Amino acid sequence: PHFMTYTLSKAGLWTLTQTLSLALAPKIRVNAIGPGPALPSSRQTQEDFDAQCAKTPLKIGTNPQEICDAVRFFLAAPAITGQMLALDGGQHLDWAPSGEEDKPVE
Image 1 (cartoon, helix red, strand yellow):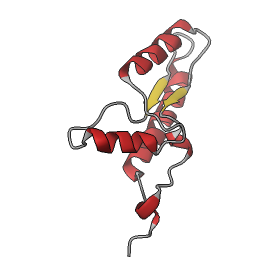
Image 2: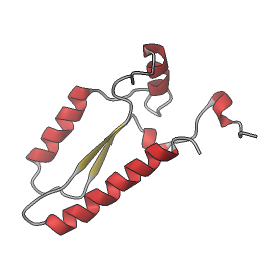
Image 3: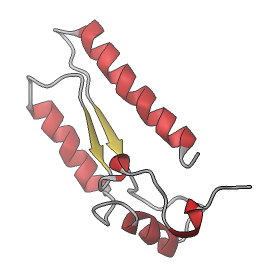
Image 4: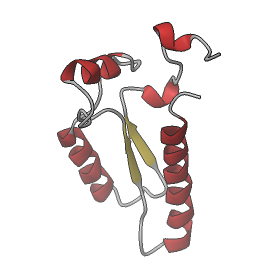
């Protein structure tokens, strides 16, 4: 499947966030941020990164400033715990690749 290891890591982050938020409440709040494409990887050209962002439902990725803003939001909201905020242009909603990638591997 496409993005299997990535999907599993996000599911693990989500479960860990919920579990720790229950275990550590009420003294410690636990929240998480699940960023999508934010910076090109070392093996990715800018063109490939832009294409990856364009495949998200919102046609954009995130950026380091937006991630920092989300952290500030969590810090400023004392009634939030056990939440994961997906900053991924909607990527978590639609894992179906487009184009040639849709064809099954034989």
